Image (cartoon, rainbow, N blue to C red; front, side):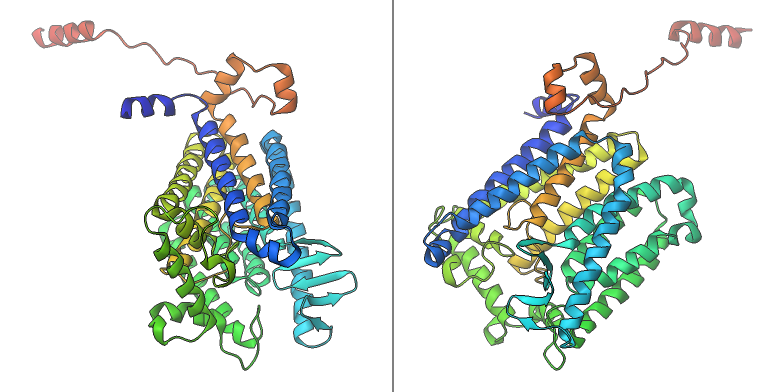
Length: 450
């Protein structure tokens, strides 16, 4: 089968089709698992088993719209929009943290639904304007990818100097470190991962990576310590929940009485009950009342219980295909901005999946991150689909793919409805002709004879 697979991968648009297929399958699996994880609870609450999956379908539709828009945008427009997306995310994060801090100081009223400031309501990671809610940190990921790729591509070879690397990249990263990490350490780890991916793709020296690693670890330590002072869902005088997420990995679960141990135990029980082939869709019992965040953070445990090891391996394989495709696109495109942005988006999605799955199976701390495409959620799914749309645009801009599309362009209505033609790549000019090997050998022989 290897020659057949190699032949399929050698086709001009193979990256585009691999990306579409893996993303679509992950999205369909996600919708199925959200319905399976929420049907019983939704029916018990309001008599309608389709409430949660209906909301997920709405956000999936918005995500498909975002995918369609982003795959139509040229690279120049994406570079232009990056700074505005990042700026809007920073403003929203500042408002969210300010309302949360005023609530912690008892300046604003605090209820079970969050902290209110007029029409605005802040509930940990969510900012609500009336009935509309969003997570600003999700938009910060997309903004950092586009803005960071644009800045790094403009600087080029001068990134080897600390002065060029530190301005304006480091101040913005430090600001996001505070604004995002105050409430959400898990999302901050994903942001750091995609920034590392951008710098790695740019060819930064290893000694600079070492210095950045020391600074990053020190900053993460400060964010963990800040939970004891009220950062995030922490409170003064209460146990540090961020530190507990790390220490629980090294404790015996039968002697641990915290809520984190309960969540880990229930997740492992779901994995154990599933076995190789699972108990069947909709037949898992732990998700009903005993598994916290069954439709979000721990939905991979629901997959393990109902679809077994085989279902888990399918999801892991699809993420592996997504990672291979994203880095393949980054390697093949000619534009430095496209190469950097493709690396950043792929690193973001893969790192988030690894952190979520590692937390569920107990080899990494629980961070509260959703599993891309699979977990329920609005902002995360929409932004993820927009990022995949950008990757799809870059896949069509690969030189071989662009030549194939220009050689046999699709119908005009397809270009108007789906996606326009990518920019035409430069024409390959043949190199200078070399003399035949026989004549070269004869000439060398004649020279030796003389």
